[in-house]
Length: 118
Image (cartoon, rainbow, N blue to C red; front, side, top):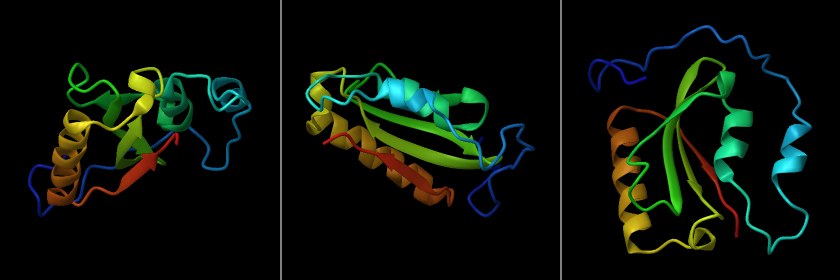
């Protein structure tokens, strides 16, 4: 997912997912009641190419998800709070995890997609 160095673009691959696809499954993942927790990982899986992503430091600060994935074959960084853990509240550890991930994406010129449940 990462380029060989910070001067090269991230590798792009051909995607089998149509760019204009719709997902009615997403409606089932996000509850209408804003007070009910849900699994943000399932939302991410439904949106990214082939449902595959690589979570960075998945066992640290589980209330935030930092991941690399592809959209239309292009690499993107994803930052999303996780409503199932601490109601997705951003504490110090989650903020540090996200900040380090943003710095890495910036170093490799990877765009960031943010999902927030507030």
